[in-house]
Image (cartoon, rainbow, N blue to C red; front, top):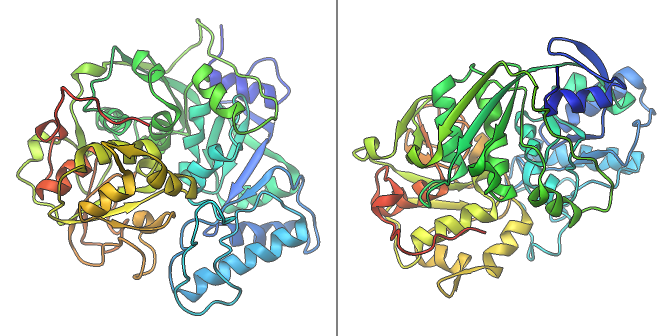
Length: 457
């Protein structure tokens, strides 16, 4: 009996020839990531268990990316940055992406970076990790954030862990992992231009529910997946956790390998599932038959088609986050917004400083993405997680009232974007942009010229 890609990666890191679902194995870890929300807690546990002066197992394999509560006047958020700086300085951790525009012991709102190319700050960890060469096929990446599974788009085992486990990894470079069963999701055929990866994964979650893949590996295959760029693949894997998945994963092909090699010279070995690998279940879809999909409040599996929600009025559109704030997402949104005006508050939040730079570098119809958004009447903010996790009340784009928001983020539980009474409708960047120009949930086909090419980065 063959093995799945997930089983092969765990076996190799446990020094085993084979593993089977349900087994517990000690695995060597390639990368540990933490950020400003969980970093201080992880550091506290590490120092408590290993000693105040203990050294991390390998400073080259620890990556710390502050990203969540950056642009706020909240003093506790600033204190977290100070704690991270102190720790990386003592440990010699070089993979630290400092928000250098926040001075020590800052009082008040920080002034954002003046140039996205001239700051050590990177932005949202799940997009910054691949951009800076920390995601590599065949490796194990663990992070103190549930959406660490994003990196499965590069053919690696990537999953979120808690502060206690992260503190242990920080000291030993190992973790006791249970081998998950695998489920296969095959998307056949060509994806139509009005669909994005977000539609596909929302469709899947609507099919199997938010616990349909609990502690299982969600493996994505098929022609529609192979045709995606790495950013769209990241969106697919990012939301595996919303179905309860332990990890999402896509076998690394030339597209993924070329992306990785352009960003790191570290060696890697891609693996793929065996033809006779065993899966808990196989789900098959015709990509052409899927419609623009929305998750209604207050769960990612509360699925409906955008067309069926056309009478739902929206107060705000939010295009950003690790799931919907990548360059590809903004090129798609700009295709809709070019030459139009938004009729509701619309927030544009690049995931990373690299994406922020792309807003000025890339053009649609002769105008830069940033100019298209500004001309349309959007509010454009600096790179960060911003309102995806709610945050302090002064967070850019936060829902501070019980409003309805169409959002490209990944989670829509009560209070996720701020006010507990706010209703969040998860959607693709195309759907979010279309809804911004109509004021109600809108199928992008209703405002797109399908005879013209759709922007894809």
